[in-house]
Length: 613
Image 1: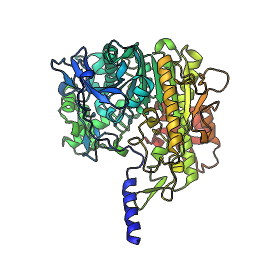
Image 2: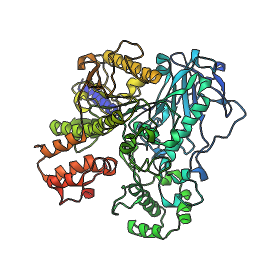
Image 3: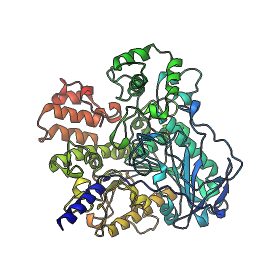
Image 4: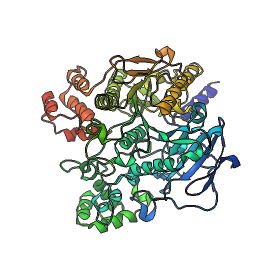
């Protein structure tokens, strides 16, 4: 009996090593269906039947493969094909470090994916999927993953498409250094403004939206009713598309789930880390130094720095293009494969040189459309739960919070900061200055399973990324953990998921979530109204769906840090202030040097306290 108990424990421990991240789905190959044959601008595609009375088309190219001399170039038109394309299998994810979001079974090695990755997938209700059918709203999904990991291949759009009568599109886009690379060698006179922008992934998204505009009618979608929506980095990309003049007219509504209004000035993208002002730790010059050392052309970082400053633009570009995909990521690391590469540059062509806060104060300067923006109450717990500073692993795998009070307090700072900047800040600016409505939410579901091994309601709560499964209705392969969902919480979970899909699809259909597509939900009122302006998304046991007024502003957070009696030393207080406000959008919108000094922090150079978590 004792041996049996030990064996069960060992199995449980092995299973729990995958906590907080989705399981890798099996490769999907479907049988072509003649009813799913469509003739597009580039050629004919044949899809297949999928769950929920939908057709699905997988792996349709929307741009030419960005390989060889098309690396670090704007996406080019796809080469037309003459024979029917069998669109029944996902294509490769974009190049990334192996991790839980790459859509591949197991650990496939240090670097996975392909530079040939600009493909998209389409789900449509069968009865409305022909060119002659009534046109349905289109929901265009941009996956998250820090813009360095992830793929469209891990999202199944069948339930959302069939249950809510919409056409769902999911896309791949270049990631990390392949999607964003700002360097003077890529801005020479022989390259146009798009090639020189460095914002290649943003341009991939715009190319995919243009493909939708040109082709979605063949799948029953309405090219004049497109909603872009995304989570985490995908939400950040939603805000960037709202800001980009090149995306004007290509979408008509936007949903940013746990997004960010951060854009990067060129000095942060390019300078050495010890310059004044400092570049990011993985700026293009720091990355190039690493490449020179890895290739044997420099023995250390000092020599690499000297070498690259002597290289001409042509020599630098030739060297960059000579590196293989694997070599480009050699020596780069990060949690779950995610690394902090600079992204979303204020280049003046793809993205404006001003910040998004500045841009959103004038609706004539951005793509002003109805917007839903929201965060999860405990965003930061997904990341803190994997930080050894806060959580220890019993037996090497079972997570236990070391100090629940400090864990909750630090999570609240980071999570409330997320809400203050991506929800309240954005909504205040747009509602005050614009004519299109903005709707805000906070997702509060924290009813994860609790047993003698782990308490998810404490460890994760309403953590980052958990709400995505509620939109797609796919919980088995979603971000989560064994035991998060139980017989006790699954019924309420499923009801909340149904309600959220009803709100999301009604917004996609009309530009307001109102009472949901069902017409039976509480009225979701816009931010600018005088009363409650924030929709809390929760189950009945957590209070249910309800409108509240719970503001969270940067000013409130600065005051909280200044008055927090649990912060016992000045450097820690200054470091938290820096973490919250200087690293937010390079400090351009919310950093105040005088306020920092008023805390007594003048003796600490703020950039030396900045830790890029």
